[in-house]
Image (cartoon, rainbow, N blue to C red; front, side):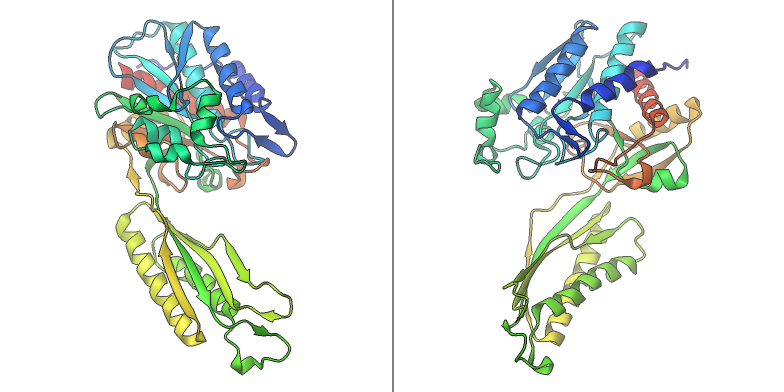
Length: 412
């Protein structure tokens, strides 16, 4: 089958231009969901799309859809990602996938490639969760799992999600109309930077994503006895911070020694009370997060971590409480879509590998209602969510070429 190729200059120029939309500086791109900067980015996309006779519309939760005017009345192939960012984020996270999708639609228009079904670009709302907690709001709405209660979520300024949507002229009451049922989307494909270092270290060009990891989070509290640091002998202390420090090390050691090479364990937040320089810490609260592609692996690691933390608590004469936060279920991606992506990469002459995604993406929700695939391109040194985030121009182009030709095969 003959291959299509993107317009490299146009793609890279678009990436540069979009990076300047919103609050952009040498400290990175800050473009929170449903803010003027986010709207400006979406209007920029709409204007660019209209130059190539592509139509667009917003749904009730702010998802932007772009598509050809002569779109057939059949379930579409959807490509997509997001343009919202973390504070001081990079220019590639989310944006590359959106612009690769737009470039793909433009090339399909320019080449008048015959397809049996429409192709849509989706720009999802609030993927990151930087403004409204939880994130992945747009993709959860599309599968009917964004409840009306979540419209009451507020940002740091007390503005609710419902109010933010209304500020864009959207009607939150229309939320149920945004949902799609299985069979209403033919397939979904998302191009994204890896946000890790595997491809960069291996000098491989394309990642064919097998699935998106699940996440288990726990809020842990260690209670000892706050006391005077100068007058409390070492043998009489019930130092909550010392106990917590041993627990933090235990989380790392258990996951390292587990033999599960894709599993990760992290303590990312720790608070010490009362926090005085001359006070033995009486309480420490911290988080534990375990990620893996398999439920049974997470179950195993969580059990081992919890058992060891309880042992340390007993040894150090402190109290331990353990509370589960909402979990994220692993999402396995469609094998036939994976095979299509791998075949396209082969025919284009690109090196590739199968790999899981350690980060969450909108694709994990789409996978619940339609065949879904993801394409990764390298992140230099594995850096993401940072102004230092970088993916080489040639990698952006290669990934978009794979996306474009994958779309063609899925939509034939």
